[in-house]
Image (cartoon, rainbow, N blue to C red; front, side, top):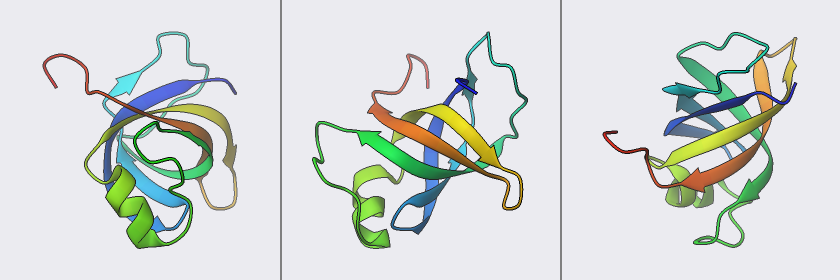
Length: 95
């Protein structure tokens, strides 16, 4: 896919799955995205927390309430989950 979406992490569902409120879209995205998407983490880029994979509590400490951007790899058609590389970032100005 190669699409990009961004927004705050609303809640964590497992050690590698969270729900994100999608507030930002790349202009050249080829797919449509809902306001709320489930994200399965393929890879994380996060300088503050070198290893966040593990328990749901680890993921919540590292991501809950933070602004992330996701490079979408693909959507699982059965579960409607996006598999993404996730980047923890500062929220955009005015967010």
